[in-house]
Length: 431
Ligand code: GDP
Ligand code: IMO
Ligand code: MG
Image 1 (tube, rainbow, N blue to C red):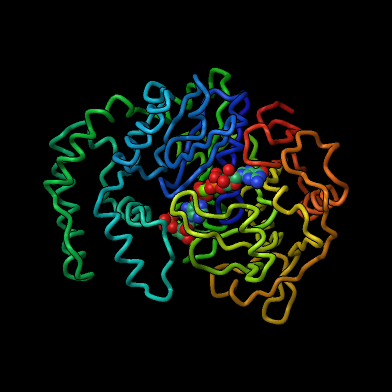
Image 2 (tube, rainbow, N blue to C red):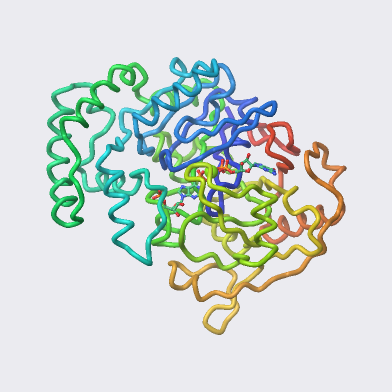
């Protein structure tokens, strides 16, 4: 058995979906373990684009089991739409999709709360995806959430929903001065969804343990990125879950020994959607160039992504917290044609040079990047499939990243397509 966790180690949108899809050629199952449909994972196969939000990125390969672990906040109405979207394209998914009994359910009042809360923050709004992710995790931790298991008995579901909605509608009407959410309508919509959903609900933890004990290979698919982690990211400008590798075990129901190797997916530069500190952000023409070349628009909300140079300081934290064992560098082609590429190798922070980012947004906002300049390359790397074809300067850039982080680069992505990839070592290959 070989398993692997694949994580984004910046602010999301590193190209995780593309890489998970590619790696499933050797896997038996893919499991999501945190986040929800705030994620937008793009797969391009034979020129056809698919964006997955909640369904694991194993969906496009027949026979791959797709599991949604207990750590994922699940909007069942959205899930059914995503399933129908795949079915319209003749991708059969229902008989290989399992949703954990432990998944907290995102309900319409979470979406309202997400909106009114972020609006109430005014200038310091997080800029969430507005999908109810944070409020659903709050309910989970407050022990008042409704979970997939509650759907098994209609009466249990109706009663739990009524209680929690009474509480939230009070807050929505009286504190946020917004319109309450109709209980009856919510219940009816959920009970209608229940019929289609129940056959897909199951014990994901038991299934995974069985797969692991019978020599099957599992990919744990991270969503968001390490710098959006609720504890280790740029708090409070983060998502509401742990995005680090250790979350793969807790969020799916396996022991830490089963999560396998940890592949960190790094975009060759940096992007961020929403608010929050971003030390290497470029607001000049180079930033515009990266956004244009990289088509940097959010796959979930369509918002323009902020762009900047690669931040080794932030990556150092990610390497430490996630125990990353190898790196995958994506979107190398987007840097083609630049005269100079810059790497942030340290920060000036409160009069000293630091090698790791301070915790929290306030500290990070004070950090000034220290750059190393490297010569760019003119030859195109777009679509390259052999390492030997990579131009010397691009190779020097990759080598420098590998040196600074003391990790091997085992995968290089040179285009959005599944095959525009150089795999030097497959993470599911035993060493
Ligand atoms: P994810 O959330 O990490 O799965 O990433 P997204 O799908 O949100 O964003 C990555 C975007 O970059 C998508 O539009 C991908 O199709 C695209 N992409 C992925 N890898 C590459 C690459 O190597 N080169 C280029 N040019 N585009 C890529
Ligand atoms: P993938 O999996 C990029 C960002 C939002 C916002 C913050 C909190 O595609 O990489 P939330 O709705 O989670 O409460 O929003 O997190 N965010 C992402 N940014 N990629 C994502 O997912 C993201 N998911 C959430 O923009 O700043
Ligand atoms: Mg994305």
